[in-house]
Structure formats: C-alpha cells, structure tokens
Length: 97
Image (cartoon, rainbow, N blue to C red; front, side, top):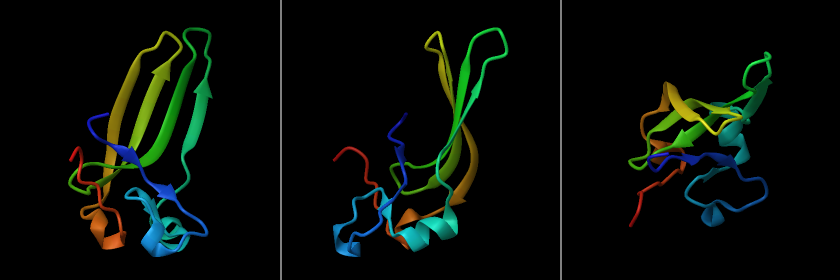
C-alpha cells in the first residue's frame, strides 16, 4: 500500500500516548468516518469494497476505496485528499526510518 496506514480513533488515551496514526476521538469525529465495508455478490466474483482514511508518509491524509475480489485481486483508488498536513491534527507518519 505504498506506506499508507489507516487513521484510527483512539478513545481514552492521553494525547502524549497516541500512536503516529491515532487521533483523539473529537478530532476523528470532526474530520473522518469509521471505515465502511460493502460486499457485492452479483453472481460473478464476490467483491468487497472498503472506504477508509489513510495517512501516507509525508502526512497527507486521503479517503481511499480499496477493492478485493474473491480471487485475490486488490486495487486501491484515491478518492480525495482530506488533509494536506496530518501533523496539524497530530498525525506524524515519517515512513520507514
């Protein structure tokens, strides 16, 4: 996934203990939605679609749609840039250090 990591909601943690991909629940609820998984079985190959927010190295946050077919095919589509600089809400993704 090219270094992308899911942005998660971290209830009950002090800010100083949040992981690099975790945000305070109030911040999460203001900017993001919980991941949504849809299954489509139209008689051909079963397909799962997942929409979730991912942060990439460099701290850009995107809403993405991932598609997984029952035969193992996987694709990821960037839907839109949500936050240009994730550090503005406490996300700090530096990639592989």
